[in-house]
Image (cartoon, rainbow, N blue to C red; front, side, top):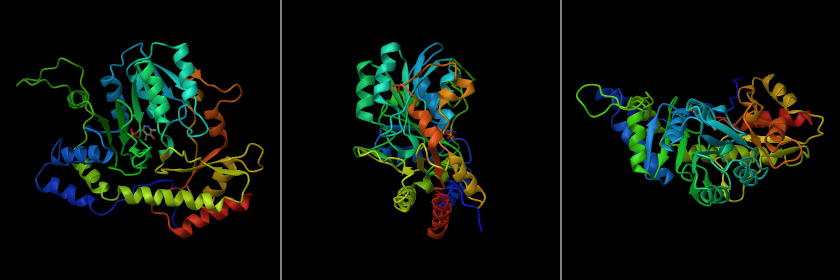
Length: 372
Ligand SMILES: *Cc1c(COP(=O)(O)O)cnc(C)c1O
């Protein structure tokens, strides 16, 4: 039997056409029609003014922080429960991250903890808020608080392409939004990312920085530090092809989640990730938590699946627990174990590959059910 993946690339069939066109016109690199069109199509899908296609979601976060004016020594708040790429660009700019705990309702940044963090650190340059596993953060609350403090928000929607909050697409809530097209994301370009904003001047600036900050001069003139972060025209062609199947991928991810949810309904010890009522998650990964005193641990589940050549993984280990980041402050509302740590301890990400068959998903379900 073939291995069952957590979330792997899933081509739709139209990608090669755009890649071939780039070849046929010899428009391999760097920029060209595919890049421009991919930016335009994505901005229109998200419902935002402008987009800059970049080499990775991490590069988009880095450029977002720079565009927001983050500099050495600045304080940047960041969701604690996330993948390290949300936080690393803060270090690239030698700024100081402060990690904010999650809430149980969304698993995302807790507005209460955020408020507490502003009381302790009134001078904050930017806030990086993640839409984890495709679930939107509580945007009204978070934007209100950040607005009171006049602080720019960067929305890390790397996992949330196709998700919404009150009918509006994720990626459009901060002053800047970022997307990732890494191989495991909901659509992929093999690797890539995008920075989104309504601020055309800032997006233009990011395009300039990410093509080595070359000034308009015949010779190579540089007045600012440059980066080589632009997406290539070939990669963008894959992205244009993937746009045709984005809605199908979201529908399939949601179907996978609902099948797990139904299957585990009668097992008391299992709780699926809550679905926040103000949003519609793309269900990028189907996640669950096991009750505290269950006889089955998340590790038991991961091992049982691995023994049948099925991929699963723990919840992201919170940034405040990472050796590299542990010297930075962490703000929580909880008086006991933090929410992020509790979810990490009790959680599992289940196989959520859009190519999974009904039978294969049933196999995953049966293996897990047998443990309880
Ligand atoms: C994948 C991911 C990123 C980074 O995107 P890359 O394209 O891999 O650089 C950033 N944040 C989150 C939450 C992610 O899941």
